[in-house]
Length: 233
Image 1 (cartoon, rainbow, N blue to C red):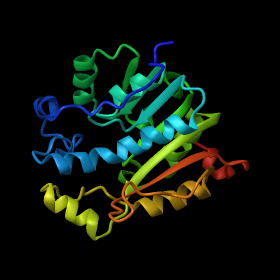
Image 2 (image 1 turned 60 degrees about the vertical axis):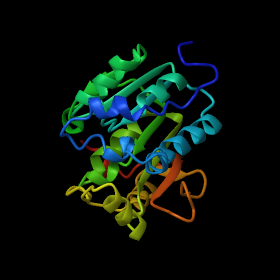
Image 3 (image 1 turned 90 degrees about the vertical axis):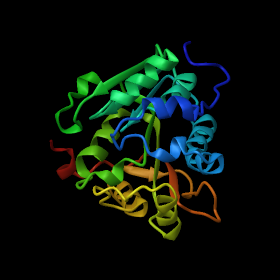
Image 4 (image 1 turned 180 degrees about the horizontal axis):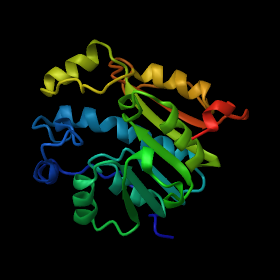
């Protein structure tokens, strides 16, 4: 057993992240923002996902961090699962995190999802798609892949922007422009998941109800099959 029997959340110190961060947008500045309160607020959604994982996933053997970006969640997942697979089209910063924390049970897959060979992926008991699906203009392929990579008894954990005035305020505070490739709100992504092979196991929730900047949900594979048109490559 590689994963820690009492998994802890790893909030990476800002001084480490500021040294690793590049000009890439993979690591939002809010993770290492100078004001502690702002950092804590931004980390809170990953902490909420981790708490949900500990309550929900009984077999913590394999996890996938889909769109792992800068790799900020990888140390926590490495504490929690035997094997973690981080998938992203750009993994430079994630490699730095893996090296800094000596994460021997993390395997990075640096690839475009449209050209990724499924044979590279070991099916997972848990998949995290934190603030990533809204970046896909067409959701068919990524959601079909998530469905294929998840074990029949596995769980998918998602978060996405609510796109309200609080989201805009957070971007202004962090001096971050809305990504040009934010094609969907979190609610639109969730609707697509419900129509394409997933069922939510509990009501969606927010990290802070009074400040609902992100919508978070936990999913399982739906009992019905995917539409035939969605199975085709």
